[in-house]
Image (cartoon, rainbow, N blue to C red; front, side, top):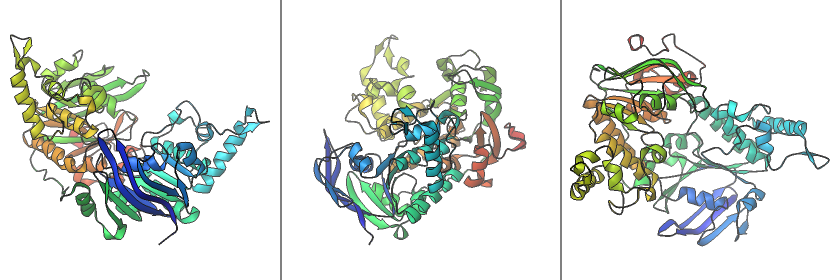
Length: 515
């Protein structure tokens, strides 16, 4: 046993109507990478937020470096050497790397003026010491997400952190960036004696980098094991309380006619700059085409243009042979397109509407009398059928959708869109925020749609998901397609090079005939 650096003793955290942590006791040792896994709502993030001082537990005791903490806060956590890197980076886009790292603790000339030269020197020295190479003068909005994550880690190190909490650190990284991050973490642990706590849903990465892993379920600690004693399947089973199989799908069959055709498409982002640049691609009936790209490389704008949520600046999109130029999202849907959007809360549901109201959107006209009176009994039957089929967990059909967990909101969106029986499906991040036990369920429904002859365009930040579901994979970088591959003929690591623009196939424009 190593030296205890963090001790949770019988920790409980009660929110109104929810017991988020229930009598959790565990010890984290100095100089180890300690992973915490569990489904959404299992209590892992709550436990880490208690450690970082965001929450004060309603029961139990927290001890850090031998010091019992009765009144904890983020300020006290930082003073104790605890740093936290959140899944969504908290950087100022218009500031330089150095300005972000020293923010609130800037070196001063004569105690008054910001000393930019000293800030640069301190950042350079820190980055060299920990092997986290960055350019202090680079503007944050102009660097990739992998470098932005380095900036976040350097921010915590600049404040003296030797306990580092990472929340889903690889969610937007390529395989190469993930490998680099893990190498850095191992070096920090081995050479600097740091302690790393890792929250992640990627069980393969837990096996690859962690020393020990704690599994939480429904607020309780159900397992604490050395990594050599577990497998991905055993961890998944402990997380959900039953066996979970994520075996590859059989992808036999020959694709049919082209149902999505994109020719020389150009789309602008919110700053009126090109996000998609003269891109061409096709999706055929009975196939899943996956888009693999690092966040911010035009994949979101591409899907928004195809579904009518963003105007087309150049080129043409055809759905089932018809140009969608000038069409509204509703008109495009009537061509036979269903859409699971990237941001379920902003564009997938009305958070103020009930579960049943959200489920009938798009079909409400067929559930009315005389075109304007809603038939409540018919609505209730229809909504109850989808709630049961897609395992949407809500107190009732009249529950306000905004009160549901993120995973249940996602299942609601998928239930509604898949119920249209549309021949074209555009799906973004289908299992983001969904429990591991429900991932298999959603994946099976996607593959069922493929078997029924749907043309499916899939965009996901999870490369495991892309490989598991896709027949063909397109890589995007800088708004262009850099490669096109059969999913069975390339590795995740090789794909990462095309996702960062380091490689590009000659047929990278997306011509299906050359794939």
